[in-house]
Amino acid sequence: MKLRRPVIAGNWKMHKTVHEAEGLVKDLILELPDVSNTDVVLCPPFTALYRVAELVSKTSIRVGAQDMHWEKEGAYTGEISATMLRGVYCRYVILGHSERRQYFGETNQTVNRKAKTAMAANLRPIVCVGETLEQREKQDFKAIVRSQVIESLDGIPADQSGELILAYEPVWAIGTGRNATPAQAQEVHALIRSILVEIYGVKQAKKVRIQYGGSVKPANAAELLSQPDIDGALVGGASLEARGFAAIVRAAS
Ligand code: PGA
Image (cartoon, rainbow, N blue to C red; front, side, top):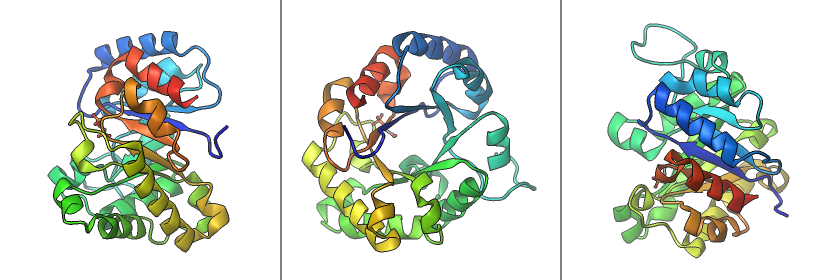
C-alpha cells in the first residue's frame, strides 16, 4: 500500500476531436469499471472538456485541462480562465508542460502565477518540471529542477500544498520512447521531495504527489510506480488508446 494515493493523468495534447474523444472515453469506462484506490484524470483539449466531463460524470474519473491563463478574465484573445474550466467541471489543470515552455514561452514565473490562480479557483495544478537532454548531459540538471520547483511554487502556502501535484518529466523522455529508468526517476523524485521538505516541512511534503512522465507505457509503468517517491504518472502517447491507458491505471492500483 502506497503512502500517497496514486494519480494517473492522461495528457491528450492536441489530439482527438469531440467525436473521437467520445469513443475513447466510452472504451475507457468499459476498461476501468471499478477504480477505487487510484485517481484517474483525463486531460483532453479544451474543445472536448465539457463532453468528456459529461461522459465520466457517473464514474470516479476526473477531468483536467492542459493549460489556462493566470488572470481571472479580460482582453486575452484565445485564452481560457480557471473559472471557465470550473464551469466545464474540470478539477485539475496541467501547468508548465515542457511543450508550453518550449513553444509558447512559458516560464517558472508564468507557471507560478497560473498555479496560484488555479488553487484560488479550486483547481488542482499539475506543475511540470524536468530537464532537457543538454542539461542532463552537462550535469547541472538538479539545479534546473530545483529552480523550477522553487520558482513555480513561490508563495503557495503550506496549508494548500496538499492539493498540489508535481510532474517530473525529463524532456528527453517525452514522446521519444526512451523513459528514465526507475532509478533515474526515483533519484529526481527524491530530490524534489527534499526541496518540498525545505519549503513546506516534512509533514506537508509527504502529502504532495509527484508524478513521473515521459514514455510511460503498460510495459514500464509498474516498475516506475513501485519507486517510493513516484506517486503516479502523466501519460502522453499511451493515453490515446483505452486498453493501454487502462493497463497503466491498473499498474498503479
Ligand atoms: P509521452 O508524453 O508519454 O508521450 O512521452 C508525456 C507528456 O508529455 O506528458
